[in-house]
Length: 136
Ligand SMILES: [Zn+2]
Image (cartoon, rainbow, N blue to C red; front, side):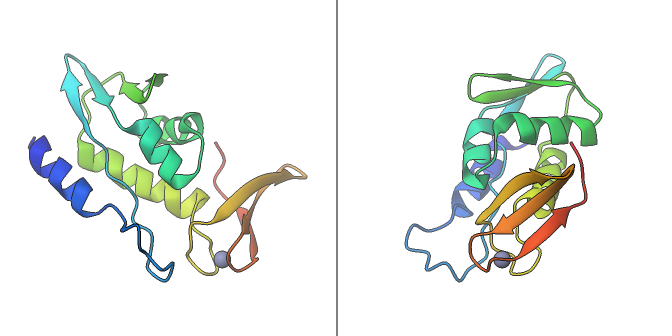
């Protein structure tokens, strides 16, 4: 796998600081490597921070989706099998669609809360409240 290219692409896709808020937020790409039978993602905490979600929550979702155990070690996530970076990126985008982006306006400025056993996403940008269907 060509991680140099992956890294370049991740850098190229980082949102500009001067972003006026009108553009769609880009989900960051994973950076990592396969180590023996494990896959180490070095920028896990960074990705979670950009999504404004807990690294544990993101990990729980991705490990379930990929049916692979994972654990957090400092800023990294370590998965118990060899994984394709593209596959992990895909699951992070899926996570963002379900847990981060507002269903009404598509902006990532949302907060999750639990109400009567359901997860409610409240958007700070447009004020919409939507129920999150997926459970972790
Ligand atoms: Zn919204």
